[in-house]
Amino acid sequence: MTLTPLDPAHALQIQAGVVGRHAGHDFEFALAMAINQCLYPLDLTEIGSGHLFTGDPALLLLSYMGQRLGTARLLRASAISTGALATSEEGKRWLSINGVTVSKCKSDLVISVQREDDVNLTIGVSAKQCNTLKPTNAQLYFSTAKGFCSLLINNGIPVTDTATRALRQFCGDPGFRPSDHPAIMLGRLTDPRRLFWEEVDIAGRQEWQLIFTTRQDEITRLLLQKAYLGDPLVPDYLLHKTKRAAHWNATEVAIYSIEELITLSQRYQGFVTRPYSVRKGSYRDPPGVTHLAPRFGVVQMQRGGQKQHPEQLQFNLEAGYFYKLSF
Image 1: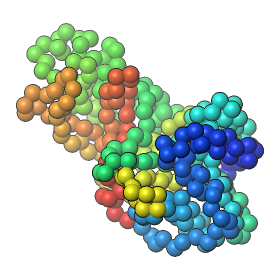
Image 2 (image 1 turned 60 degrees about the horizontal axis):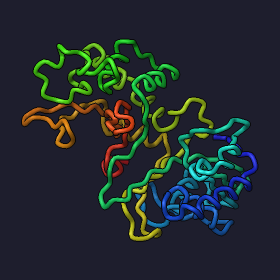
Image 3 (image 1 turned 180 degrees about the horizontal axis):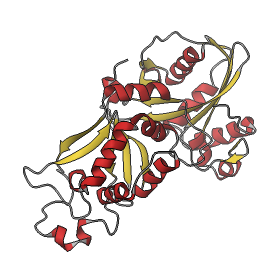
């Protein structure tokens, strides 16, 4: 990524004010401030070839990037939290990258670094966090069935109307729900608001299986990097706080370049479905009833089901995936 924020000093001023009002609430804000408060030039720590580390996440991230950039020393580094800017009206008006106004982006951090050979780079980082004792799913992408189909089509992955229809059934779009079709409702014992994966039109389901099987790496890359049309802040790295930490310097994090994570996800598994039953909510499954949950690599796909946007399509990183990937 070779993006240069306009007037980074102004961005840092905006960010500092926002972080002051939201201290302790957002991991990426704290990461950005920790990077900015380091003393430069900074000699980086040799952290090895793995992906799981415990310590100061800001220093771990800089060291990890330094190894992949081929430098053991940074002359300087400064970080901007796009979330911090997004919460400020001034930031919303200001944030512009190469003349493109940014409204949504997949990079939570934009880090400008100067290597020891005086090369300047601007790097995007996607930040995830878990603040429970055990890792949970991390949301990766949230859209409508039609929105996801458009994302694929706009990036050269064909999706037919048949496949689009099946995904709308899976999400429970109006007109595609069991409750919209009396014949389907006859004797139905499960959720009337949507069709489960094993229930959608078989031709559409088979097409999705083929798409996810043959285009897994491309789709994983889209979900990690390019979920927003025209996004000028595509992330190069992902940093994931794995669980609650006793203090900042004892934080466990998983760090990957996006290319590394795509490769490891493919190696982990291809497209599969796993059985599950609905045990909570208004439409619990009767005993013995199971459904199929589609997933590929470390990515899970599900109907959102939230009260505000129940028909949305949601992709998550599997809980604890960083413990399951081989290096």
